[in-house]
Image 1 (cartoon, rainbow, N blue to C red):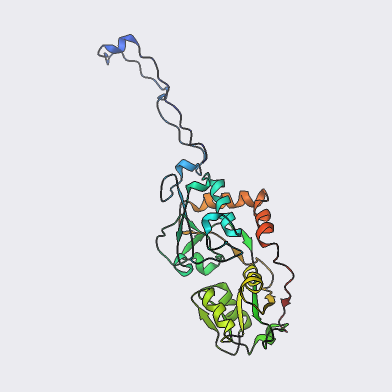
Image 2: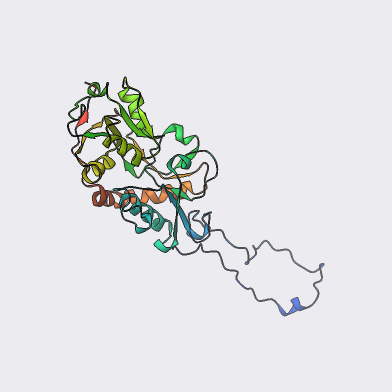
Length: 296
C-alpha cells in the first residue's frame, strides 16, 4: 500500500512562562504569523489512504460469474491469472493496494452497467466503452483494444464465409447487452432474427446444438472457445468496424465516482510503462491472424 498522505505535523511551540498568567488584552501585540498547528492537506488526491473506497484499506473489484478464459482462469479472479485478473491486480497495486487488500465481488454483466449506486469500487468484465453506456456509468481509460469475431461449427453453411454478405441469411447469436450483439444488428443486419442469450454458456450450447449458425464474441474469446471449449468449431473471421477509435475495454465505476480519475491514472501508468502490453502478450498472444470479413 502506498505511504499515507503526509500531513504537516504540528510544531510544538514553547510557550512563554508568562503565558501561565492571565493575559492582559491591552498589552497583547497582534501577529500575522500562521498557526504552526494548522495541518496541510496532501498534494496527491490519489494517495491511497485518502481514496474514498467502499471499505477503508480495501479495494472492492467486481466481475461476473462465471468468467472465462483468456480473461480469467478457472472462474477464479482471486488467482490473478488470465488477462483481466492480472490487469485488475496491476491496477490495484498501482493505486497502492497489494493483493491481500483486494476483495472480489460478483455482479452480473448487465447489472453492472445499469444506472444506480454500485457495490464495488470498479468492475472488470470486458466492458466496451460506448457513449450509450456512459450515460449510466463511468469508464476508466481503456486498457485493451478489441475486435469482434464470429465462430461456427466446421462444415456449417457459414464456416467458409468471407464477407458480411455471406452471413446475411444465417441465424446468429450473442450475449445480451453486448457490443457483440450490436455487431449483428448494426453491421451484419441479417435477414433472420438473431438470438440473444443471458450468457456465453447458453450461447455455446445453442451453437453446438445447431440452433444458431454462428456466435459473435470478442476475438480473444473466439479463439479460446474454438480452441478449448467447442470441439469441431472455428473462427470464421473478425469484423472490420471502420476507421477511427477502435472498440476498447474500460473499467466500470459509479456514474460520477470520485475514484474515476485515480483509476484512470493507474491504467494510464500501466500503459505507459508497458505493463498492459506485457500482460496482453502473456495471456492473449494467440489472438492474431483471423481473416477480416469485408462487406462483400
